Length: 622
Image 1 (cartoon, rainbow, N blue to C red):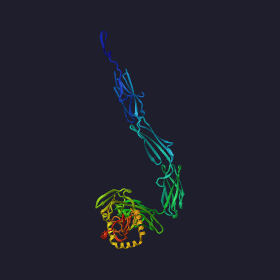
Image 2: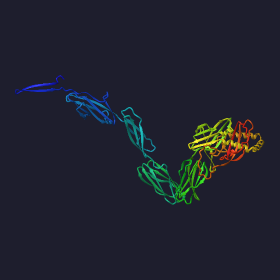
Image 3: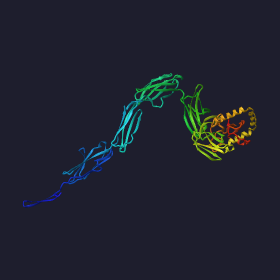
Image 4: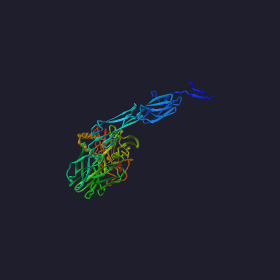
């Protein structure tokens, strides 16, 4: 560096003096070369499919250096400055490549290299063992493997893309640096099958007329079809037409010549893998009811449509029959137009629940089809029950409810004493109850809920009431009619009881013991039944009678059902486990209207002393 500076040279030429000045610079090598973001290991990290920046800086020295980036001795770029930058999208093949940075000022040359480390997305490979092509029913093992230079791997995910019996399996390996996928096509060779869900085909037929059969068959190879079973008639040849890839249309013809040719026919479709048996039914007269099943709410309009396969029904008459609980309730007339019959019930309630059968009848044959109808309504009272034993009184309410009940509230003097969320099988039991529909007694699925009172109740029972709720409404009942019925019995039947007592006294002690035993068995096995006089019911009233705030329907389309029903009331007392000789009151019959309040007008009668350990009482509506 000391030699650098200005040098002057004086020269005499032809008596003339010439001066030369020369400035001398000392060449300096490039220094401090480095790559931006270089690691201690001499690597530069990047991510596959992302931008990677390579920046090289240097102190050029003297003279100014030329900077150049090279990859495999191929120049990428160069310039005359102290830094150079190259940006590109990192690919899988760039992983572990080395980049050279060269600074050259003609006197000195400085070279530095760096290795690229690219975070690669998983390289996924899907294999099928033993093969990606297999017969239906055989096992195929699908393997999903991947390669990655990153230790952190997340679980593989699989997706299937179905196309008939070809499947594309997509396997994905996911990392923070990317997702790798691979796909394999699996081909399954399968037996023929129909596109429809069922291998049974119904074909409407007329005697002496051709019945045309059409089926769409899915098959890997072209199928062959032949008849296997036929009751008679003339059969045509099978035609197989290629519609599109792996879909074929097969068709044939049958001509029945009498009713014995109607019914079941069989055909078999076969390909290289296996066969499919088809069932073909020739139908001469088919009845369809729409909808086949429906749920309505109270006050909805029920509309049912009945259609037959034959256009000419002039020789047939049409009727609709309503069944409920297996009991025929009534016969209805629909509006018939050609081969169509429509039934409409303009205002429905729970009594419209049941099976509606559409019948087409002639002098020689009858054809029918049915629809199941369900009507949601508020709970409906079917019976009340009270029993006394071991110093306690149990009040029970039997009722019908669709949908199921959700809550029961018990009141004493209109004050809530219990509010229970009903759970079927725990605090509300399933049982059979009796409904009166169009003057027909129908046993249906119902419920029974109860409330236990400490002490033996008599007149105080009438202060208790119960409200049962479902999502459609409420049922509110009281036990007022129990004491009214007792008063009615005692007032009108006093003389009869005295006469019957004399008769029973003559029977003797043997009969007394027998009656006590039978009464005990009756009490044991009949408790908690809402069927009727032969079951476990102790107090029966018409549904929806005695309600406080029960949901009430508007006027109904039932012309046959009266708003008030009249019955015979029988009041009976049974004594069980008595310390003394049992006293059995005679039965007294009286005609009353539960719908009206005539039972309130009867005399109170004499009070009856209750010395028994347990007393069973019931009032039956007949």
